[in-house]
Image (tube, rainbow, N blue to C red; front, side):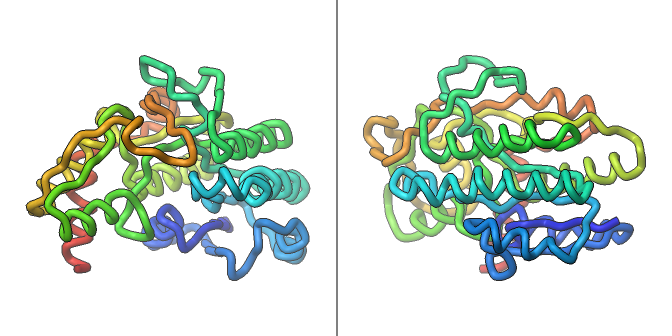
Amino acid sequence: MKILVTGSNGQLGSELKLLSALYRQFDFTFIDVEEVNLAEEVSIRAYFADKHFDFLIHCAAYTAVDKAEEEVALAYAINAGAVKTLAEICLEKKIRLIHISTDYVFDGEANQPITETVQPNPVSVYGKSKLEGEHHVLSILSNAYVIRTAWVYSSFGKNFVKSIRHLASQREMLGVVCDQIGTPTYAYDLASALLQIVDAIHRGQADEPGVYHFTNEGVTSWYDFAYFLVQESGLNCRIQPISTAQYKTAAVRPKFSLLDKSKIKATFAVQIPHWSESLKICIDKLNQGA
């Protein structure tokens, strides 16, 4: 079975590359911007013209949340337009699509874990563009999967964990937002869950298309996340809690992004580690690579 993964140089794509070695029954192809320009429909269709895959795991996206407030057209071209084109190609070529989405499709006003049935209400360009991409997938394909995640980090790429470690090694104090609540997602754990889903579908064990939520277990704030990270990294930087109002950003962030994972655990028997345990693993990897 042939699997195509987009965004191969990103956090999730890089983790999928590593894990692909454990799934030798599948034939993986990994692509990034060098192979396909997602902002151009012609480029996308040209790539698929003479190729066929059984699965497409679409990890690539425009993820510069603040920049999207200015680069509106580009954000929509990649997060919505390209997704529509990919969904149409999947329909034509009978490719199963797994599309990665985000907690930013919600407004952050919830006060309990957010299930897949909660009505999205994005408050940023990034969130709105990602929700439009979801709509294209679900309206064009009846057998597609949309996997929403949040607060993704990895030993690969640019992310909160690597930024905090770098800054904490240079400063005596860092202010981190304490009133945004959610759960970090170790990209390795998400990649593992995605391949478990593909394998379950391939084996005929489970196949229930639709929207699913995935993050690590537990709940925290960015402040508590950063505090734990700095302590576990052995850094002598004081982490100071600040409010969202004190940390101005171009895009509005959801204040509450705790996603309910009951559906994905029940359907695919996915075992999800607690965020603190996964963070320790990532810290070890970063320390070994330092």
